Length: 70
Image (cartoon, rainbow, N blue to C red; front, side, top):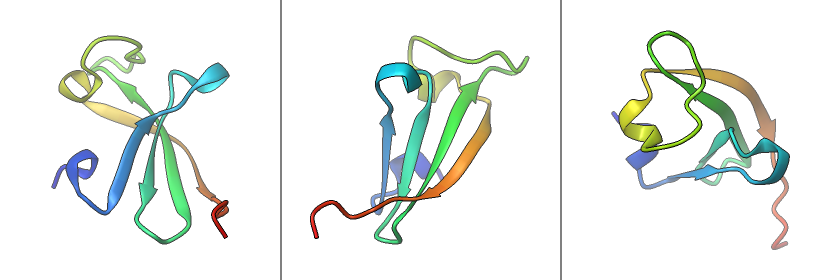
């Protein structure tokens, strides 16, 4: 299954000083996985079609996120 296209998950590129990182919000669980997409040789992918080029990921962290709408 392709996690980036699974509807309950929200796949997004982060901004600012974390612009090379991506995150997937894990539905309504209150958690997200932050990752860095990499090529076959382990180099970080920083431009182009990330989803087409990505062969592996480095998990940076799993974090609990607050619901700022409550």
